[in-house]
Amino acid sequence: MRYLTAPAVALVLTTALAAQTGSGEKAAIAATPAAVTASKEDPAAVERGGKLFATNCAKCHGATAKGLTGKDNTDLVRSLYVLEDEKGILLTPPIKNGRPDKGMPPSNLTDAEIRDVAAWLRVQAYGAGHRTTYTFLDVLTGDAKKGEAYFNGAGKCNTCHSPTGDLKGVGSRYTPQQLQGRWLSPGGRGGRGAAGGSGPSRSQRTVAVTLPGGQTVSGPLDRIDDFNVAMHDSNGAYRSFTRNGDIPKVVITDPMKAHVDLLRTYTDADIHNVTAYLVTLK
Image (cartoon, rainbow, N blue to C red; front, side, top):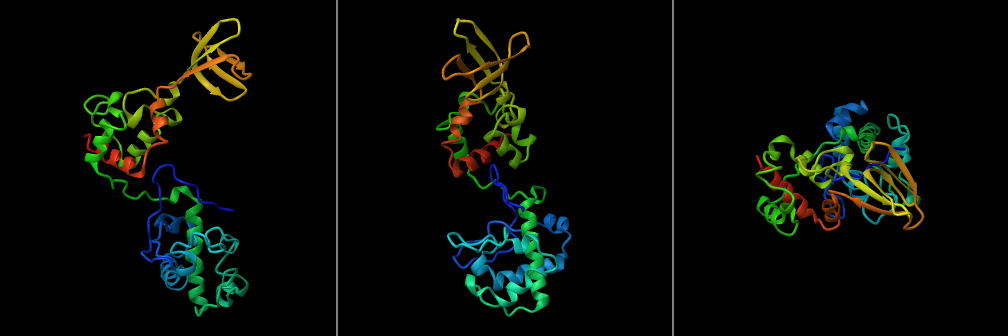
């Protein structure tokens, strides 16, 4: 089965329909042109089906077929009928005849119209399960002035970073989406410092292990869990130690700790405002 994977930071699909659900909610996601192409559905049928769905089905199933909040059995993107349908074979009977046991009335759509709706639904399911068909929306919705105030104030970003130093020109080196991802998760997967600056990366975490006899071994941290801690010592040799509660004593130095701590406090407005400010650093 295909499931929608959650974005990391501000990633959504483009809105193909401006239709609203019965609850007044606007569509949050819809299949992109890339999803239509990759799914090998007929673009014309998908376009017709989307309009028909918006008029006849969105009130109960949501404008993008992902269902209505708090209402069961309304998410069609994860429905087996949609996931396993071919050419409307599985979807035609329930749409045409309804599902009285689920509170779904019969439809007045013709067989051809149902096939178009089915094509549109299959694309929604395809797009939800394939990240490569995602399209970034504009993340520049924040206020750069407020972002600068947060950078120099509540966020305390200026204690480690400088718009004329390590962040100089950062707004020219990355797209807004890349920039936002880099400062929210600096050093991820061995990347560089915050917003792509020259600062330390998360991969530069070090650990000091003090053994019961008093000997201390330190070096770059490889991994740690409740049972073991692994590192490379000053000679480059791999070392691993079994942990039993607080023995041995383990002290980790993480140059990105301030960013990790801030993840618990950011609001959506903070994120977009800071991104808007960083983009101005040309």
